[in-house]
Amino acid sequence: MKDDTSTLNRPVTRLLSPAGWAAVAIALLVVAVLVPLANLAAPAGSALHFSDYAVGLVGKIMCYAICALAMDLIWGYTGILSLGHGLFFALGGYAMGMYLMRQIGRDGNYASDLPDFMVFLDWKTLPWHWAGSASLAFQLAMVVVVPALLAFVFGFFAFRSRIKGVYFSIITQAMTFAAMLLFFRNETGFGGNNGFTDFKRIAGIPIATASTRMVLFVTTGCVLIGFFLMARAIVASKFGRVLQAIRDAETRVMFSGYDPLAYKLAIWTLSAVMCGVAGALYVPQVGIINPGEMSPAASIEMAVWAAVGGRATLIGPIVGAFFVNGAKSWFTQIVPEFWLYFLGALFIAVTLFLPNGLVGLASAWKRRKRGDA
Image 1 (cartoon, rainbow, N blue to C red):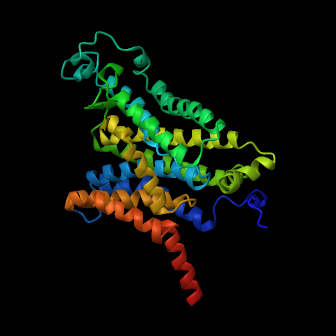
Image 2: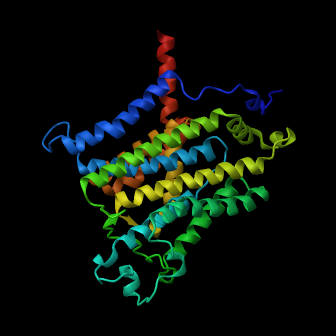
Image 3: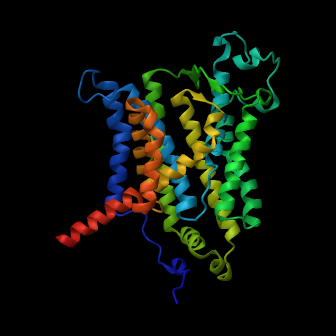
């Protein structure tokens, strides 16, 4: 009889092969050197020029790729399908957005120390949860603490109750939908339907300049690469092997003396933090954050990115995020009315014909080519 917990007995694999390290080095070179040079140094009419629009688009997609990587850790490697990670992404975005709104100062439409939406609603003072919002260090801490705390509390009760499968997915979707309805209310102090926008500065530096946009782009790329290496180290460790064993046979893992609750709670909380960081990087580059980022559709799209790219591969979800969002950008410009049909058809096609995603298709093609040779 096959031992479903054989994953636990595999030797620890090395972090990356020489080819993998070379790919990481190339990615770092492109993000930190080539793109900045192509955008800031190459003239606008040159074939080597990387436009401001492209910088913004790729920077946004890299934020999505971080979310897809987080989804792979919990779904691909642990077997937990979350349909609520858009909430953690939005919470990180709102934490950064609160700081950016305070950075506007008296440059707003009402020339007030309060954000414009508060003046419009006739608020006289900042609400209590805005107390530390003028400090970048404090808000960066909130980017991590708030998603982590919510994920830990929710995950503890859900995993302790042994909620799993489709029931867990539905509960996570209900959680993010409830949060979206809450943030739509003006009295919560988060801008209601409009959210936060019209940002002026970050750390006292104008946010709309090419150099600031490039710093944000490079930071996002380096964070994505760092999270990828961290995720690779996790799945290659004993901790990662336990996660995969939980995915394959949780009951046998319990009989082997391991506590699945602690492992699932740890990776669930870490994935929430990754999404929160992605949201914090997303907001200053896109220039807006509103409750729409918490919509169930936003969380479902994260699962689509992971499935299209290839679950349990780490690189696959990143590829999927770039492929799906690149196609979305193209379709919404050319034939916007057909974009959702394309997305649905893509997900159905991957589910039926490419269960291992685009990365799995590429791997199968390479094996077939080696076999022919």
